Image (cartoon, rainbow, N blue to C red; front, side, top):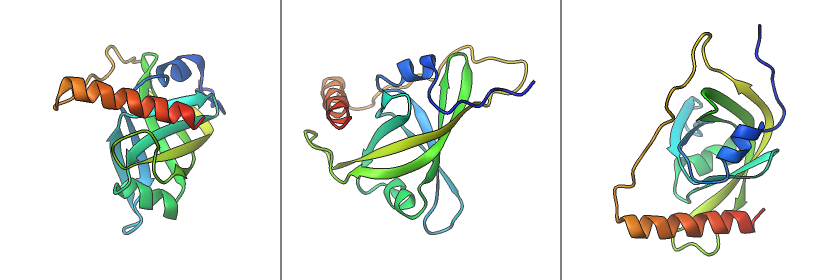
Length: 152
């Protein structure tokens, strides 16, 4: 039986996007027109129809989105893997209240699909550690989340 295609975030995904987490995004490279995948962690869903993420202004992702707004965000949650498709745009060229030069990207969701292969489930979600000063990382993460929420 085919998985149902949703047009907005289901509850476990929305709840999972209320804090920093590991996700990947696929964009179309502005130079090669081929897929480009990046891992990011500053993500936040202000509602079930949109996802914000913050990235360095110099990131290749910024120009990719300006040239080709269609993206896919991949998220592991709810014992499965989800493909979240939509169009993205630069909501803020420079995110206020953050010491780094970060752009705020807004993804407007068009569909959410469970893309886990048949007969399996995720037994453990990805974990990661910050490799720089723990206190500074926690402070920066909080600043970025607050700034994203202020743009909702």
